[in-house]
Image (tube, rainbow, N blue to C red; front, side, top):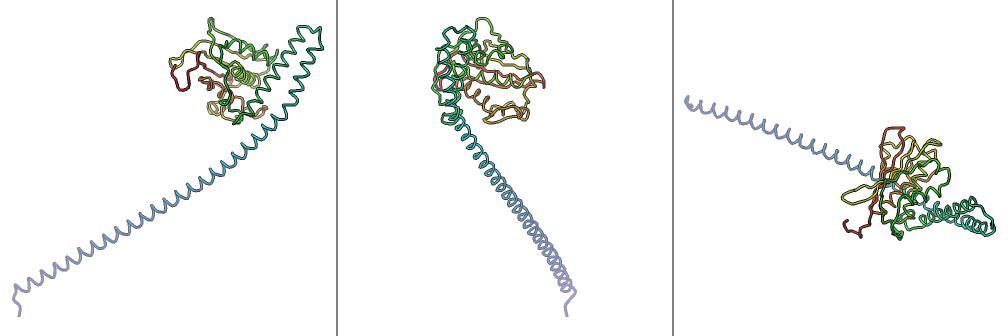
Length: 308
């Protein structure tokens, strides 16, 4: 028969064993719960990753489809422009030949008729130059042009452009040139194309008979001497959201969708100004205060990659 001491020890051992089983069972349950939570979290992350991957794949498919649509639209536009350029060559040649014949036949031409002949000839020259742009490598990529750089007076360029546009433009456009404006090194023809596009826009998108202001003044930019060429109309202005997009190829804002155009004019302007190491921007003002374009051009061209 066991003594009291042995019975107490047995009871204590049994209690310790029971307590150990309870603690061990609790730890097991805790580990099991942690394992379940870890698996749930892992599965949740995996589902989230799968959803993100599926969303990324969907967006990639949509982007690829949009890119295909844009590429097809661009190819269609290139084909249209190429066809237009080809079709315009013949009538322009006929107009040019007819003007030359009229000049020869009209021996007693008045100064007014001679002026009209000259304007027709310059308009034909302008159209031929634009067709030349169409037929360049990237369609309206003037970076492939061979520049004819020479001393150039912006006031003369402006007067030349207005003469091509015609009397209705001369009556509406007011030119202000600061005193002592120096000439700059540029391609007269290219700058004339740029101004023609800006003046055309100003005349089209402003009220009939309203004034268009063209100003020329000296201005330094990043330490380089240059000139600021500003064109301001009295139209409805340029929305802040369109300030950069209007210079994109083929872009036309909702406000201009009812006016004929291909969305290429301002793209050409920026290409030409940048080719001259300058910059052009649309100035955003209050609605109804008119559209304003600022073109900055350096007085001298730097060698490729050089510094002023």
